[in-house]
Length: 217
Image (cartoon, rainbow, N blue to C red; front, side, top):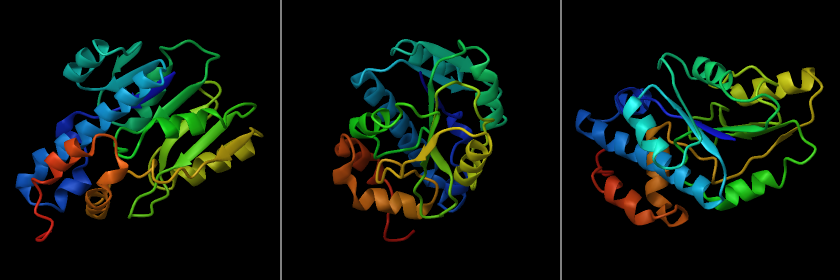
């Protein structure tokens, strides 16, 4: 099962919003929402069973109508806590893939590449690629839901690798550029604006990005 956790729009991308004029807050919300919708579309195209974790009841209700086999309403306090609580509600002994909701370059190639790499592997770590170089994690595959404690955030790629090695698990690190590029910084948004030809439905991203004056930010 693929699990996607998405915050309430009011509390998403607070660092990115803080460096932009206030009038662009809604624009960033729309951008993240589009990334999330794109992820769900890709999962349905594969096809693959998926679930969504979110504190937003409206998001969960909408996603239930769009094919999610699992939903969980978290408290919105912490990503890792939300994931830890959610996996207690799903059956044991099944593989899971945790994927972040802000990956605009995600497409079917990403999933096919990843799924071709998981045979006879306990853990696959896909580091995030961002201009802030914080060595985060864009996606994490585990052959069972609780092989590793969730520890997403800055330098999480290294932490997941070290924990997997210390526990003797078979693991891989796949640096799947550009699919693992996220939207953490203003430079990430500018990169997206320059590489729209690489995203699914670029016209939808262009419509949102056209609301931002890149000459003054």
